Amino acid sequence: MEQLDRYREQLKVCDEKILQGLLERNRVVEEIMACKEKNGMKILQPDQEARQEAWLEEALKGCRHQEEVRAVFDRIHWGSKRIQARKLFSYNIVLIGFMGAGKSTISEYLNTLFAMDVVEMDQLIAQREGMSIADIFEVYGEEYFRNLETALLVELQERENVVISCGGGTPLRECNVREMKRNGRVVLLTASPETILERVKDSHERPLIENHKTVDYIEQLMEKRREKYEAAADVVIHTDGKDALEICEELVSRLRGLDRER
Ligand code: S3P
Image (tube, rainbow, N blue to C red; front, side):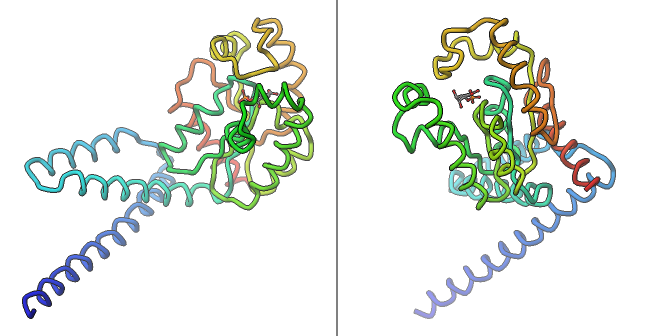
């Protein structure tokens, strides 16, 4: 049994090393953030993540328990992303914009880059109601759906440091915009009607345009909404011709700029 005690002692030493290593690593993550900010560098550097992965791959060659170790490193990297996100944004990021403007794509990308939790309003509403958005419109009508959106936004004010991906019509109600701004910064994503049509043409989940998938119709509906969208926005980002990384870079730097002004 003395042997067992000795092993346990050894394990404790390992745990202490891991703990110290992790705490130090997290401190360095914060230093890196501060250094990037001070020198006006890009916060997002996905190449670096690829380099870290390549290093791990190499370092683990021939080792036992590769899968287990890899899972720990995944979690460590997830933690670093969260630390960065919390340092950057003490608030929620609320994405608004017309159908097909890229709200879901950018939310997903923010989740990959910063490990921020994402609330897809449409998806959550559909899940809770147990039916698709198209069916909710058909069975209960638009007003019912809009009330669900408002109630969900109110509920989401409890959360912090999450990305809220709104439905295209969410900012049309003033009370919704008030809720969004209570604990969040509102980012409007825009795209040309041609781009929107290209992005939505194969989906059948958007009852308001299901039978009107033309550039003219989209343009008219966009125009009707423009004023409200723009009034709600703290930041506007045009997405045409940009990839997700470029859009996220712009989003981060614009939000940081806003924070510095306030
Ligand atoms: C709507 C947009 C949809 C969905 C519903 C109504 C709108 O969301 O909420 O069909 O009024 O613009 P997406 O913008 O995610 O497509």
